[in-house]
Image (cartoon, rainbow, N blue to C red; front, side, top):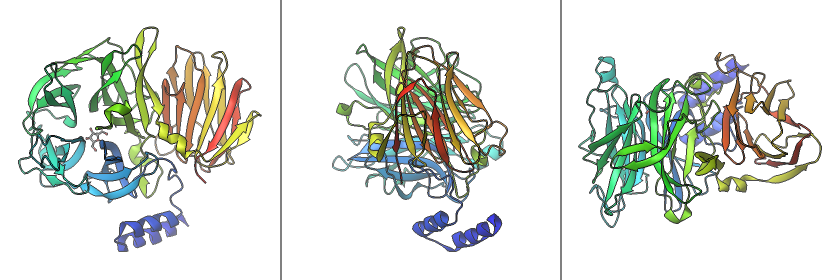
Length: 495
Ligand code: FRU
């Protein structure tokens, strides 16, 4: 039956040319079982890292690594989606296509308000995308310099893009891994504004500076002897956060693959200072932004209004261990829910809190106050809240009609998500696992976002976060709480 369905579906797809038509065919094919209801997914085809996250004129832009012709990784494009509220995304035409220089790998977008690049005008300043070219011929021929940085610009808020004729703007000097530029504007002590590019270079980051986004000078590097080194560093980001004591700190995040705490991909962070092209961390501890297995390559939005005081982050909700074999059919991968990053302190140490973006509260449809220790689930997308008394151990179990379950619990100072009985796992041996995270301070409240193929767990509103994919054979239908959990509320987030 599935085979026949697949054949009809494949033929229909080949003969349909327009995006909307394809989308309808996919939805009606019955092969969309795991398509999330509140998370961003590409219309069809492959997706990995979020790219060029930027807010401009009331619109959030999400560009992303995309291969529209297959559900496996391939020649990379930049897909594009926009949102007015971070909860509903509209698909836009593909923003950047591969060209003779190579595939378009990850990167960032900034608003060049003073037209420092000269690629727009002062009246109509451009958006500038800075991305990595990955040249396949170069790679195949055994050269080392097949990744280099290029730029493209847009004068219509990201709808259409022009590649800069002088690309590459930052050639490679012979390092195999030389990618994922994240550009941010830094105001120097003398008031001068410069662009700083943070680039992942094998096992560390490099910083470059520019006045015009075209000519780049090497400033410094960080990381060779800091942080985790079980794999290559990718997708860095450099930004400022205000600490609870009012001091301004610089934060550097870098994703690493493999070598994460749960095997495979993960994102680590450093808190410190950034001066004259040098990043000086407060200490040399290894810290993870998310202790689940499925949050990678995340970065923050640029150009958010200064007075909003927000740093918004979105990650790719997968792991390179199994991203290309997960059992979705017409598309692969979703993004995490947007999160607001801030700093909090535990015994004098500053840590990052990742709180669900406040807009997510607008997703709430119906509220169910749960008096007993179990309840049915009103929808495939729900938010579950509970309070923990006196930092006691707790347990929450989600189950379905096929006897599958996933448990979320605290025991021996560890917060864990056990997905060993959560459904489909045969696609990769590493999927069948229980993931744990150390939490040395009090767990006071639990907030869970559950969708058709994922769970995001926020303890104390994101002081500890775990993101995990799940592929149950039928939807989760029931939730059970340990006796000591109070103030239990479930919100349906979709019909
Ligand atoms: C991270 C990454 C990036 C690269 C992109 C290619 O997931 O490997 O380093 O630019 O994906 O798609």
